[in-house]
Every structure is written in C-alpha cells, then in structure tokens.
Length: 317
Ligand code: GDP
Image (cartoon, rainbow, N blue to C red):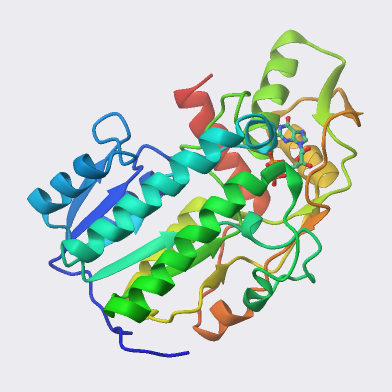
C-alpha cells in the first residue's frame, strides 16, 4: 500500500502545528519537538474552536502550518464516553473534517492524525492487527467516539487517494503520563485511580473503589514514549494504512490498581464495584508493524507511574 508521500520528511525548519496542545499528548509532543529545530505553533480549544470550519480555515490560511499533528479531540474515559454520545460524535467529526479538509485546502505538506484503540471491533483478535479495522461491531461504551475517529482515518485515506495528500494515521494504545486529565468525570483509569489512591491515603481510608471486575486487560504506554514514536512516524511513515503504536504487553485492571496503590503509598483494600462497566474485555494492539520500523518504548509502568504521580503532586494535589 505504499504510495506517493515522503518517507523521508524532515521537520527541521518547518512550521509544525500541534492543536489540542493542553492535552497530555500535545504537551508531550511539544517536549519532543523542542529537540528539533522547528517552529512550533500551538492552539487550544479556547483559543481556536476547531468545530467551526471558518475559524479553522482562517487560522490555517493565516499561519500556514506545513506539518500538522491532529491531536485535538473530545476525549474521556469509559463514563464520559458512555454518557455524552452526542458530544463525542459531533465534536470529533467536526474537528477532523475541518482540520483535514483545511489542511488540503491550505497545502499542508504532512498531517498525522491520532486514532485510538477503541476504533477496533470489540471482538477483535488479540493482539489487534491493523487490518481488522471495520471487521465487526464496536464496543458499545465507546462506539460514538470510535465511529467519529474511524471517519477521520477514512478522511486521511480519501484525501490521499483523491488529492495525493500525505496524511497518515497513527493509532496509539492507552496513554498515561504527566499532563493527563485527573477530573473524575472524564478521566481514564490511571489518573482516576491515582486520584482515588491519593485521596484515600490522605483520608486514612480503609478501602478504595475500583470500577468493574478488575479483569479487563489493557496496555499502557508512557506518553513521552508515544510522542517520540509519533514524531518519528511524521518523518518516516507515509502509507495509506494506519499504524498501531503500542507495546504488545498488557496487564489486568487489578494489576494496574495494585501498582498504583504501591506507587502512591495507599495500604488499604481494593474494592471492585461490578455495577460499573468493564468495557472492552481486552485491548492489546499488535505492534509488530511499528517494531519492524525499529521503534520500541523504554519506560516501565512503575517508573512511568512514579513520574506521573510526581507531576500530579506538583500540579494537581
Ligand atoms: P477504556 O479503556 O476505554 O475502557 O477506558 P478507561 O481507561 O476509562 O477504563 C479502563 C478500565 O478501567 C475499565 O474496565 C474501567 O471500568 C476500569 N476502571 C476501574 N476503575 C476506574 C476508574 O476509577 N475510572 C475509570 N475511568 N476506569 C476505571
């Protein structure tokens, strides 16, 4: 599936736009791009509402980004995904449509669109290979988000086919790290459990609640490792097919919770609330396409959690 675009696209000297830069991935991308001699353009949803086509195109016409990391998205954990379907669908469709179409209109040289493991079918084979996209029904707790994100991937492919745009899609596994969202309304499991363990320890509580059965399996990638790979892909990957960004290693939610309480220093009991949803039983990405490109990650979970907790203590506690 190799085609027209450049597999040797240097970001050096380029105007590189990171939208959604207050988000965890946006911030990690900025840290990574600061090691390259390029001009970093950054916007947040307060400064530029990418759901508005005219605003998105005016901004792109004026600033003329040459490379775009499309990270802006309405995102959230299992509760938010399950209870705000309209926002997850509309916001993400509008953002992708406006940025991808605008990128074509304004002559962006390269665009990397961030997908998500939720885009794969609920019953996908594990580890999940790239080519099982759209082969079965989605996980119901996040299908709204997944449908919107799949549309963005298809837009990248369509603009490549019809207009020759060098737009690629990378599909990272669950990410965590400094800058994560710790708001219990819409956080993912790692920041949610860090916050709960921290509060339980401070209150001298005997127990702490973990949602679901503790048996679902997830893999977790430290965000700076992911950013390094994304910057690599921006410069070295140019295929119509999307590429998974993962580790190929997974652990149960119970194991994650146990590691988190150890890092935070909470010594009470874990109580599993099985009235809360488990979501996907397993979500392990097949990372072999990425490893063939010589990319792997270094940060172990406990090390990454220590850094994340340190960031939390400094910024959120
Ligand atoms: P998912 O990967 O899309 O399912 O999103 P999450 O990161 O929100 O949830 C991952 C798993 O962790 C699910 O099985 C949740 O039920 C479980 N989990 C356990 N405790 C929590 C919690 O306090 N918050 C969240 N968001 N998930 C939790």
